[in-house]
Image (tube, rainbow, N blue to C red):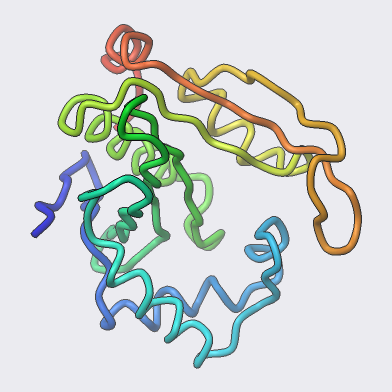
Length: 187
């Protein structure tokens, strides 16, 4: 059983079916789904299926596993953060996040990602964490930059996004970089 991560204002904990209303509140929004590959705003039933999937993403036991955590603030789920264990041998994971714009401007997404990166590097023993985003997703790129992740690549027209070729940005951070910067990060 995954032990929740306590940040300054947030608790990161496994997703439960009780989170459906809060998750549906942002999964139904076109501005949230805009940058998600292959996702249009979801119906309540589609969100129920999504939440059910997330409830099973409760730990990193083997390469390929996903750890998805609800970012809870003041009794509400503001979004989710996840780590995908990409390589056991290389101790590498990919970070992802989705947040409800209703809570924008409060630093909650930054705090949640900082807490998950801290767990990944300091508790789980990762060597490298990377994140990817559509080149047009400026908010996501700013978040990764704010965290001290370096932009390692711009993959030009590297994937089909809503029927058009799109550029993808790749950001990354090493454990030693995390340890040297983590004291200065919010959260």
